[in-house]
Length: 102
Image (cartoon, rainbow, N blue to C red):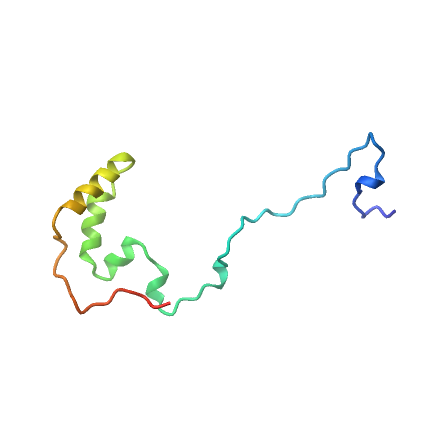
C-alpha cells in the first residue's frame, strides 16, 4: 500500500480508527449559480433603496426615512400603519411599467 492511499475500514484492525481525509472547503447547497447571472439592464443589478433614490423614486426615500430606523417588532407595527394610510408618495404614473420580463 502506498503512503498516499487513504485507509479504508478493511485495512484497519478492530482497535485502529482510520483518520478522516482532509476536508475541502464546504460550499452550501444553492440551485442558483451567482457567478453565471447576467443582467440585460445594469439597473437591475442593484435593488437597494439607494439605487431607487438615484433613479428618482421619491416614494422609496419616504419609506426609508420612515422605516429605516425601525427594528424588531415595531417594524411590523409601522408597516401596518403605513398600509392603512393613504398613498402620499407623489404622482402616480399609470403609463409607467415597473415589471421585468424574465
